[in-house]
Image 1 (cartoon, rainbow, N blue to C red):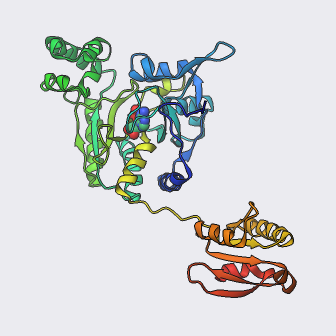
Image 2 (image 1 turned 60 degrees about the vertical axis):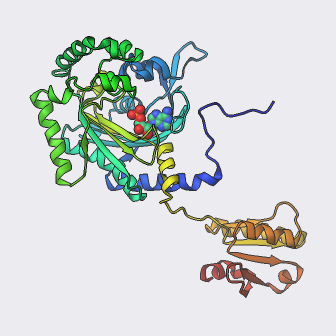
Length: 418
Ligand code: AMP
């Protein structure tokens, strides 16, 4: 029996890793420009961390988590998202005491047992940030700018920014009650899934993809029209900060996001280059989460963006240049002694950071030349008995076909000037 990878997981093969690296480099460059520092948390945590923060009734917690009992019967979960772990680490390590505003970012795998489809995996990767310690609407906008800047720097143009406000514990319960009342009037027209959600998670009915729900809820009231004065002022602040930067955005009063911890701002960035799973990134403010997880009351805002979805857009639009990684020199040894010399020399050159390749398969001169060509080596150096005796050899530039006589002791100089 041949062993296969688990459904919904993917190998990132060498042919794809250059584009991943280019994307990760762009991400790190933008994080540096915005002054965010990397945090790496474990990929598994106590189950209660996620159920408490994301919400028992959300899709993620109620049906998608990879939860298991370890050998000491402790319930553990593979992280389905990054925020809960980052906040846990922030509280546990007293990061709030080290600086009044913590700006953290992460890149890594997340796990959700969803139905696999294009753009929806069971192990996928996210990059994201969490900024903890300020309730300024400008910071909400900074959080939106980071993924937008990553996409812009990778040449991705077709993105749309949607924003909304999901209110706070002052105004949301009043709205929720109103919404449930309205939904109850049209309950028969809703999809079975939305009917089930109506009591427990009524806001999610609004962002249902089911046409029946979309039609039926066309005229229901929206949270943005029920905001308390503080939430309304914050939402205005976000819009004017976006306006000051001339960032185009659309208000989507139905945007609620699938995690319970959001307060005030919620946003999503979509791409027309994606199919039905068109969200590239999503995020928002979560002013109560730090306290909920045992820390001092600390406002927070963040986003998470899918790496695989970013790759899908990059592959479609072909807008990223990847660095070609090829050997600067392929050293061919013609006999035992020359091979041994080549091995020592290659190690020395590599320690200087010069990419070198050798043959380890005992191939003929012709076969080694073919291999050097296949690997697109810039130079080929053929070493035999006479080269070792004379201390010189001909180094061929494979692109131009020109040859140059070099001193073996000075290969590094020759490579540097070639
Ligand atoms: P979320 O944590 O659900 O807000 O998701 C944030 C982003 O992560 C989404 O906009 C997607 O780009 C990506 N994402 C979420 N779930 C998956 C998944 N199952 N497979 C691939 N990407 C995902």
